[in-house]
Image (tube, rainbow, N blue to C red; front, side):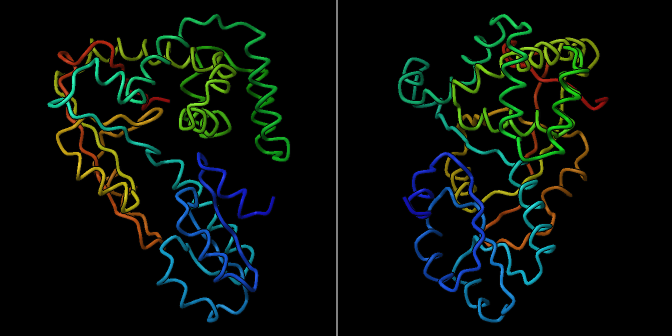
Length: 294
């Protein structure tokens, strides 16, 4: 099986394509339309040779003559992708009933069902060891993450669940990956940690309800691809369900800063989500928490 076939089959992944082959134009013609291709990085010393491709392929992040510049750009793009809402589910409450929703948009209810199930699965030492084993295997060639995993193995306590998630090391990366792909097998492997995280968020949620004013204003700054942005515009007035956890800030300027960070991608739209809710009236099954102290 050649590389193009592998790319075509990897439909649930975000792929970074790095090319330095003489046939770069031919490769891009066959792959740039694949939705799983997130970014394209061209590595070559003859930069002028590839300039015309920038206007033909909006997924090209840049053309790099130095390996350090290429590596830095890849790291920045990884951070960018990790901050995105990876998938939106839409539901028009004016046209469907809850019963119809469960049949026609099962992904909309998926996370709620998962929440209910994973918090009731026993979390024991065996569950922890399964998670550690999988994480070590996944990062077996990444010494830095292996060090974090060893620290987690020795020091982790249930009360530290939020801290580890906000630390943006292997926990944050793999939990988000698992939730995006909705892989039940991997979800089960992470039951040990996710159950603790839900419980910690629930406790912080209770504190928030007792201390907070009724109306909460938060902001989320991010970049969306044009296609995703158009879907949002087309679905105004409908319910939106992101996969995984959605983080936001009370600080609007900070959210704007995240949204407007420079990018070389031409198919990106800067978006600021402004979220307002009455925390005393919102459905009790919806849990949110202030984790600024972490």
